[in-house]
Amino acid sequence: MNLTQHVKDTAKALGFDAVGITHAGSVGLRDRERFVRWLEAGNNAGMRYMARNCDKRMNPGLLLEGAKSIVCVAINYNPPEMEAQSSVVPTGRVADFALYDDYHDFIRLRLRRLAEAIRTAVVPQSCEFKICVDSVPLLERTIAQRAGLGFVAVNHGLIHPELGCKILLGELITTAELVPDEPMDRPCIGCMKCVRVCPTGALGRDGTFDAGKCISYLTIEHKGEVGPELAAKVGDRLFGCDECMNCCPHQLNVPVAANPDFRIHSERRAISLQDILNWTQGDFDRAFGGSPVGRIGLERLKKNARICLANQQRI
Image (cartoon, rainbow, N blue to C red):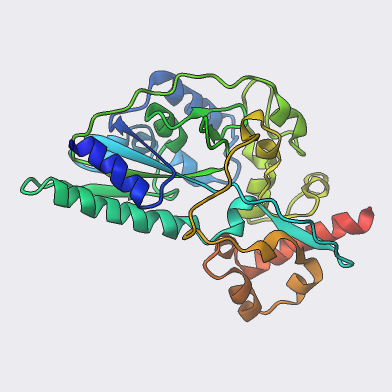
């Protein structure tokens, strides 16, 4: 078996739902220009880190000396249908990806194991690796499209033809030379359902995306107060927003997340807002330890809970 097929088979055996390979060179001119225009328009809002290390973000080969290939992996997090729970108290909800254990740790561990498998396979040659999960500057959806994992849609997410929108990405940059897959040159169908359903108008019909209006940004990244007009549109969303994915035609009839090691916490579907406001740090750690929600801390979660509670009291 050749090395490229061995890498793909190993990635699947480690629990990744999809894997693709691309070269480690720079992204294309069109993608570079699109990203620069997004930054120049201020659409990264308070995410100033997006403007740093632009050279590396656009040229992943700069992240690892001698890099030749990028192994792109995806995990499906589409949750199973759960019976709606009625509640006499106001509740808030978290985005579907936060129903699971922290995907950063989950993906990083398995990419480390994949690197070890590649290193063993290429002995006596030596090879180096760089593991990327979110925090590394990388245009990961563009890279994933180039690796054949999907296409970037109007909702600015990556859509896998069989797995839909609700996928989490990771990358393994390596000096090992692997055979690249064909890029997925497939446009979004342009139904604009995501644009119409976005509660705050963060998505533009012209393909623009204003992160400063996005509920995921406001409830996860934004550290300050949320203005009253946008706060009123947050609804009962405590952490993140799934609207632009739930409405997508490509999300119909996709499989439910099947990896038993990627543990789901159904109790996070609806959480008492008043309970959150009364939580101690210990309560928060017990509820969201090892969760993506843990990254925002108790005080910011309480801020979000106050917004959700005010919205429900207005109804």
